[in-house]
Amino acid sequence: QVQLVESGGGLVQPGGSLRLSCAASGIVFSLYRMGWYRQAHGKQRESVVNLTSGGTTHYADSVKGRFTISRDNAKNTVYLQMNSLKPEDTAVYYCNARHVTVRTLDYWGQGTQVTVSS
Image (cartoon, rainbow, N blue to C red):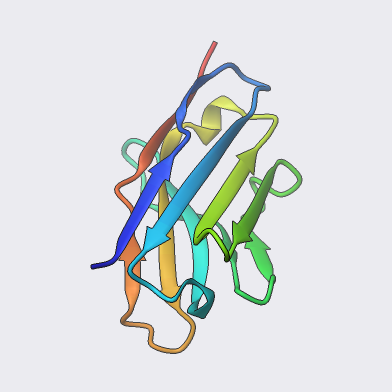
């Protein structure tokens, strides 16, 4: 049974930082591209960043220079360090695991709320 469990969301003031974690189980972690997506209220889900097992990253323009993704294959965990947070970063953040070759092996976490507000 595949599980992706996110943690680390919360309320933060503009300019603050948060670190999200996503612990994966039930998959061969190194065979998956890991990513973070977000969905703001009333908007479509959008890609924030993804990271291949080889270390290639793709960031959305809106978060470049502020967010950093990393993965620990030994712990089956992916992280998202978010700095200089803005109110427009407010959203539910979802972890995603997609197999590098079998695209139907595509899994999502339950989401964690990030609210940026003074």
